[in-house]
Length: 601
Image (cartoon, rainbow, N blue to C red; front, side, top):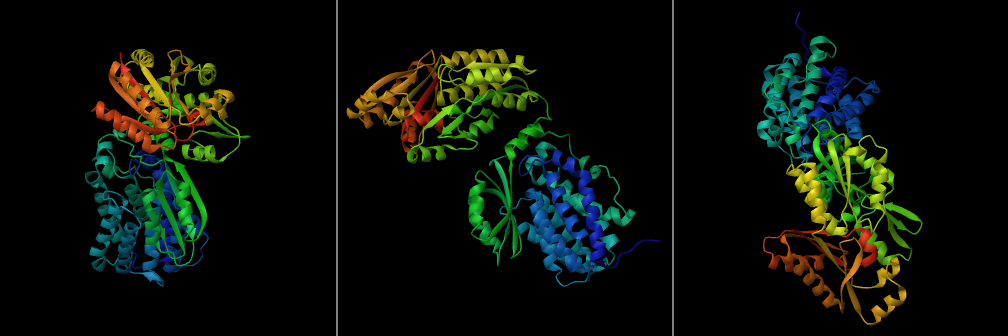
């Protein structure tokens, strides 16, 4: 006898969702494996499973049987437990479904179709910049199919089975709507997760329990093999930040507008009393500060997407050479991200407290301390354990590792690197190189090594070229005041006071042995600025194919002026500009800057 379901109450919908959650659990790893959009951080399955797990917990505790009560519990539980981009969208879908079925004890197919249409619309509205070819496309196509057929299909069994086929067809078309999916040879992971939820429902209707299904056989056959290693990660911001906000009369649109400028992939899901906010950002703390104006933040979560992305890439083939440096390199963050450079942080000492450079303290934080604190400030090399951790992190991914660091004459960093890899099994594959320089000059060498690696030069050739490059790089550091050199102990106080009295401004450089020496000395701030750039230009004219990098301590206008001056003479030159690390800032102080030049011999 054919099974028919003429109405849907809370009890039946509860069973549907319980089985959908089981289906998501079956597919969790597969969904992670094909996750490339909005970022390739490999957690779509985990996020959807966590969201559905929260839903399961909520409805298992609910003993009521009306649809309105169960759908309300599902919406609240999804909102509380939502994780990631897909989880937040799913939470808003359930929120829309609950709002559209308020006061309903049971639903006909037509009533359910109308509610599903509203739910799909609500999910789309929650997203700051909705993208076709994702979960919201499949939600919309599925809901539209329901609306078109519900009035002449009073049986939920038939309606769900046919609408599942439509959802699968929509899923199969996602690569045609989103290029990154086609390049990777996958369908959208979030969209597949939604189809899995529908599969769980239909599977339960047909068999009374969840059956193990072959992972998306109906659509995967239409796609080529995975090409995830060929896909750009698309990670524009480091952190995935989420929080649960509670308040009165919450305006979701106003909340969205308030934090939209702090990142991308913004989703604001919820109701007038509770909202789940998801955003990709570099400043999670700023996001939470802005949101706290609207109510009480009861839960937060921050994931490092760079680390997640690096982790999933370990499953692809080993690359030839990995690159490690230290945070004195003063490279712009985008260069570090682009080439997957592993940066070992130096240690910043502020009085009795220690901080890790770029991890626990950013340049702007250090500058603020530099200007306002009377505590003793210093930096020290990373301990050997930091290097061991860095090498272990990338040893599985690369056949060999080049570890390029600040001059041995200036720091014990290289010694720490040597000790750090001494007892490692892969120690023979780690090649530690003394740059014989520092700051952006080191940064230029690191960038050069990264480029050679990308161009697939052999390990031996890269090492040889970098050692030659180390003999053809110069840095010129302008010192606006002797105050910080005296404070850090680099300059004798008596000499410093005399220099200050006569308004002397030194320009420092690093010689071929890796020692800091004086390149010039002038009187007055204007002269030190012009002399620094003149020295850099003179050196650049002596070498072939000069490349430039500039770093500064809270002096972006000066850095830009240096860049403009250089570009007027070397027309096609690209000039890297970065904020100085504490390793340099503590000595040259606010207003200081440095120009590095790397040329071919």
